[in-house]
Length: 547
Image (cartoon, rainbow, N blue to C red; front, side, top):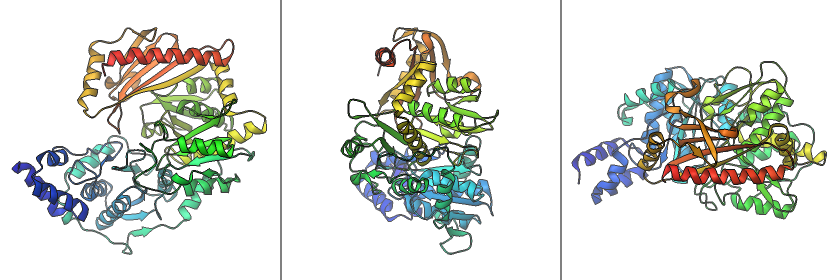
């Protein structure tokens, strides 16, 4: 057995309070499993702007109680005694324990900790930070990652996710933390440790009823929380707004950290929406809604004229929600924002209405920093923050608020004998059809992604999918005045665009494609042409990447 690895494992074992990971380490040490120890101790989870996220297990390269307690100690050191932190968590394995460990460390360091009353959607935590006037927030979730993962996300006092340099300050404070067995710990019931009641959830729901959801309410909805924590909160939100209770997929209604009915608990993944679409067909639903497991994302499906349903893309829903918010708010200083990988359509909608528009790096932490007057923000990965005349109730993506708003849009359209598809066609006629798609490569070896990016930089493509490459931006150099990030952006003839970037949360290389087709006849003809052009882009890009 490698003595260095064994020494690291024994040092970890001496401070680990969790019997499950202690047993895991003891088993690996007894078996002399160097490979497994190297996976756990050869590197570590890095604390960044997304906080921490990784596979559950023992060691610094896994999510566990020691990793979480160290993160909480780093946050406590940056904030200082007397500060107030709200803590939320989902229903994944160990989430409740990680939340309690966070409260114990924070209160032991002289801070105040308020735990949400149970497993709840991430947007409730983001709302609670501002509602309670807290200095920071923590939520324990891995969002839509596989069942074996968990994560730790930090919010600042404005209710949005942390951005640099705060993340670096917390990371450095984590590094300065000694063994967690030496940390002073608070306990439930002691001064500074509070478990909140349902009042914070009721305040969140009241804030959502101020969103621009109109007055039409005749709508049949099929819904799934995908085994996550969104079901009860969404049902309460719909009831508070006067909608009929959605029909919910029974097999996926209750929180289950093993996500037994789906390969990946992400509504974007193939097969994840099958049960919801089956329910919609059985019930004659006018709208299909889904949240991811922590309910900060929202997916939408709509009936097709000839039968069946289809899921809207994140960009399609972003354009519908964005224009709706613009039409139902007022003021010269309004701002809408999306990311560099989302469709360019929102910018054209904003210009047509005389509203300011901004593009940011990928991630809601950047969207929330787009500027003053923000009334709507979205990212193509099904994340939306919907505002009203009173501003944004949640300074992060909110799958419950988005679901409520799109239900209002769909109900009003139905009252007028129209559908969400008709509204999308209206936008295409006004601004051209903006069709987007993705090309993703999931890898077991991250060096494959590094190699693909290096090949693109060494040999930049001159044509993609029949379009000339008119400009190439290396986003790692801070293109367009944005902070540096790993990625490449190609601007193509005819308004088409390609962005290639590694995922920040999964072992994936993600490619974001867009073509813009003028609508001179039937919108269906433009959609058929767009599909052909997107397929050609995928073919050429796959060849260029060499994956």
